[in-house]
Image (cartoon, rainbow, N blue to C red; front, side, top):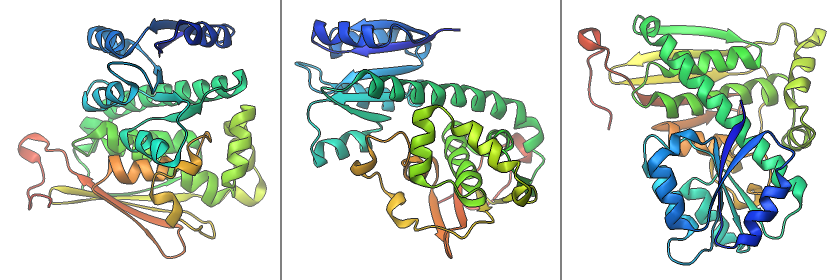
Amino acid sequence: MRARLLVVDDEAVNLEIIGEYLETEACELTMAAGGAQALEILRAGGTDFDAVVLDRMMPGIDGLAVLREIKATPALRSLPVILQTAAAGREQVAEGLKLGAYYYLTKPYHRDALVAVVRAALADAEQRRDLARRIEEARAVMNLIEHATFRFRTLEEARALAGACAALCEEADLVGMGLAELLVNAIEHGNLGISFHEKSELLAAGRWEEEVAARARRPENLDRAAELECRREGRCVAFSIRDRGPGFAWEPYLTLDETRAFRPNGRGIALARNIAFRTLEFRGCGNEVVATAVARRFGSSAAVGPEPR
């Protein structure tokens, strides 16, 4: 299936350039010559798209206004948005990140930069669709769980657990995204020792999943499993994730840092903290993280307890 991209720019030459840059990719492009047209297209069929490439500075309805509407619309809020702009100052970048932009591209940019970011956004969109399917499949079983502990080693196991355990929560799509980020982080960085910079290089080369699988097969890693504990506590669900690594300096990753805006990785923990969970706290050296979310009510058998504050 060809991925569908909405490309928004008020300058026709920029739309042509993006079309040329992406002509070798398996993408179907819909072009919008400004913010007003983009909103019309999104309101009519926004769920048909896999990602949006959005110009920030446009007359009339600018890119930030379009981004705000996307993130304020429940059916569209998980749609990855790539914000392209000539305004790459610290405050401008931080503003876009806080509004929910997936990545930034600074004009002028090379074809390779655009292709790398679009591929990452489309991979993210595919993972979110897979996560939604897993959540729906898990609802009936997860209704029976009050407390459970799981051990996991692979990316596939992490994604399956994220979908299943997110089914315990009200905003399952957001919690699932956040859990997937934390569980994958426990595998790649914690258990397997892939550094931030190594992951950037692996993503650029399209070898990240291959390298994770290869390291997991090494003899010294065959018994290195991470652990996820889920516990219902009244109207909340608490998730505790522990890995077998030495920990890391987690403090800088709790916020959306504009210095990482142009990299293909490095914002997952901040997005989990700001969007997916009520609370998120790293403990000790950083190899344990505890997050909480609002529990889903399961009919008459729902857990009864105090409302979350």
